[in-house]
Length: 340
Image (cartoon, rainbow, N blue to C red; front, side, top):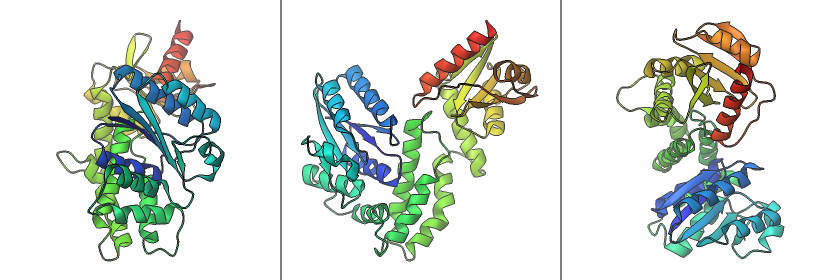
């Protein structure tokens, strides 16, 4: 059976996926914040199921609540597919919906990770040796704020560990971002039984982060992250390619560190003329490596300016999206309309 697992973007949400990826071999994960992104990801899952047409599949949603209307929409969209539904959540806002659907499991006394853990145990015989029990309890202690629990402080360090893991943009590189965060939870699991475990995890945080990005030669964390992101951009550069007046460029979204990543991208991709990174508010940075004057581009498309190799500006009425391809399409059409 193929599992399509959508979960939240905090420690609890990734905790659920940490467990399911340990249990299921055939699993594809998605993540969403609360609000409209949830249904955007539901639609993404439905499209992926239709593309692959697995013999049997399950849509699993954890640490996210749906309204009755959204549940009916999910049922309608998945009706023609050989697909079962399962939702595991603990948010009281889903109470009304949970009463109407037998696949909507709501338990407000536990975090979603613990609910998922129990569900995996009951239905799949997961973790008979209790290998993951302690880390699940730590996530539960912090997520539902059991401040007297002995694992509360450890959970608190883990909470900051995940919320601070922003090196990889999850919209642009969702699989890599998730893999990074799950690797941090794995590292936390390894340290949880040490003496003064919260301090041990806090002390190990920097090296744990670096280890994910370290491939061949050690370097500063910023340089390791830059090399990692640049490789992701370069490996799939057709996906990120845009054009401006016969110049070819790479378009990033909310990546940041434009000076380092942009310059590295230009050096590693000499067939490209510029690098552009735009954020959710429409502010953009441009970099080049003596291939073109990006200050003129910044002025034309965003009332900006700067230096020939480093400039920036802002695209007014920028249309943000949860899907990178939509952002790229908007930027390309915007540039084409200005330069035609």
